[in-house]
Image (cartoon, rainbow, N blue to C red):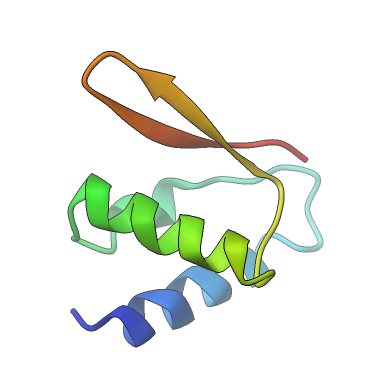
Length: 69
């Protein structure tokens, strides 16, 4: 899937939770892309100011992103 489509789907997914006090990131798994690619796209979106509230979490063998409201 092309990166622009992924970015659009992430923004749409986040928008669905804007009126909620909970964020359910399971829609990110439905993108059917690798975790590494997903994390890189999210980091790029954070760096460009498109989204915020995510922090990088390092763990043995890689990293992930955690959401904080």
